[in-house]
Length: 148
Image (tube, rainbow, N blue to C red; front, top):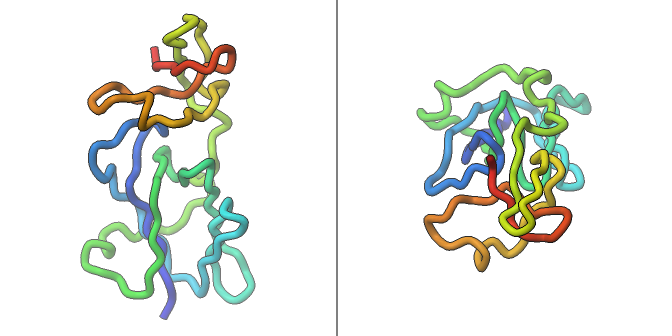
């Protein structure tokens, strides 16, 4: 008997605002162990051998083009898990250097590649319900940037 890991709460692109749980992801396993290291790596394997490695980038896990906000580890498969079991493919777990996309600052009007933006702070007081989720903060002035 082993342990499994399920990825869920997926979104594409990574800054997509979710009003619900997002997409369910794959289930990997069974493994002899699943270990989180320094809150940045999720290692899976048997014995002392790491067979699979997921990377936590900021607060999301990337796999097969989708960013997942949550994961769960368990030892018993539920019926809903069985159809989502996949063989782990390390090529699908490589975090992209940056996603294609550009954003414009809502204050100074400068355009930026999304990977250049600063992670947005205090969104609960800067974005009202129903407003579009910003891609990040402007590195020049600190205002919110919206995708263009």
